Image (cartoon, rainbow over the protein chains, first blue to last red):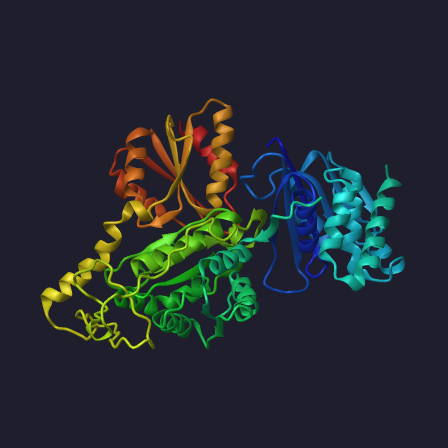
Amino acid sequence: MGGRYEIRFSGSGGQGMILAGIVMAEAASIFGDKNAVQSQSYGPESRGGASKAEVIISSDPIDYPKATAIDCMLALTQQACSKYYKDIKDDGMLIIDSDEVKEVPTGAFKIISLPILETARKDLGKIIVANIISLGVMTELTGIVSNEAMENAVLSRVPKPFLELNKKALQKGFSMAREQK
Amino acid sequence: MPNSKKKLLQGNEACVEGALYAGCDFFGGYPITPSTEIAEILSVRLPQRGGKFIQMEDEIASLGAVIGAALAGRKALTATSGPGFSLKQECLGYACIAEVPCVIINVMRGGPSTGYPTGPSQSDIMQAKWGTHGDHPAVALTPASVQEILTETVRAFNLSEKYRTPVIVLYDEIIGHMREPITIPEPGELEVINRAKPECAKEDYLPYDENYLVAPLAPFGEGYRYHVTGLNHKADGFPVNDSEIIRENNERIMRKIDENIEDIEKNEEVFLDDAEIGIFTVGSTARSARFAVNALRKEGIKAGLLRPLTIWPFPDKAVKKMADQVKFIVVPELNLGQMIGEVQRVGNGACEVLGINRVDGESIHPTQIIDLIKKHK
């Protein structure tokens, strides 16, 4: 399904996976020069349950808005990982939280395991920035949007009092990913 | 640098932008997933510009409030989903016979009943046409992108004001909740139609004047005295038992749509000119279909797509043309077969018609369409 770059963010409801999807789509289409479509799937509950957001990025118009063969997927919980990893394509990438995802799926895709939630809690003191760290990791590893576009997209979505925190979280994501390269 | 004109908006957010662009100044509603964002955002935006937002006690009252506001001269909107749309049917019929312009957004979710609130569906296609009893005009628009939700919401208000009839905008949860970059049009860029006002003396005003196909509608409160009822009525709006007047009015409210079908109909065609295989669908499944058509064309298979943006009145002429041209037509839909019956009716045996149906809360995947066409050709 050429020309499409497909991303899936998955975790538990309330972890900010949908916001991560929105920011990625804005980085690509508003702060970058590509087309993007973001869609989501969630249950009737407002917290908990497996939640996912998908972003399709392309230089061409995007018809089908959902994932077909995923280039890069993030999983912050075991439940989300097990439920959603099957659509990752053979040369794709799976980014997992190293503390949460213990049953690592096997496949032809690359697996990157990082302590994203622990870093959010310990280094940044706020678990809620795990999604922003994730965006940093994904941006650095995939290069699908520039680091600058991602930073602009994150900062445009964040309320002023939390600018520094989110900036730090994003930088942390960039540097964690660089160490993996 | 960011492109300042482009915004990443959700379908329901674009609906609000379209409504405000069209001059909507009243919303009466009752929140329901997956349409709630429309009510939520309008509850902030309408008061900011002097409009009124009312959350009513239920969906019946919501459309009742909308009809009242519209009769008082407002451009009035309500938004709902399948279960709420069922409740609105009573007032929908009232708006049809009383000829009250208003717009109803239905973001379709799985049913029947409360069904699957967060899952997409296209199971209200027939409810939009036949949900309320009696012969009545049905106008329903089916956008398939975030940008189109904006433009079709504007068009819904325009058609509703022009023809004094309720207009429904139908889109599924996928289109309603997904986000795409869109451009919000500048004032003047899109046509905005405002209601025709009577030119006669106030005491001579007749809300259902038989000299018109669509008589001007005077706003209540400006001194025009007239009656509004759900009963069959004569020119001044009062109930009537005269069979000739009853027939004339029942036929006229249909005729005002039928005689203007070219103004109301709107289709997109993708590679249809030389197509040997046709696809007919709307909304998110039309995006799957467009994907499938592009993929099939790359393999030399001549597939084409007919995508109505007006599903009601049904695009008989365009479907007939396609049915006479192609070997078979595929109708993918997120229900167990609603549009397909209409395609078969119009095709009348000219070609085979095959359905692809899903009611599991998932979208129709392009490969489902591609595989069926390859297998069947």
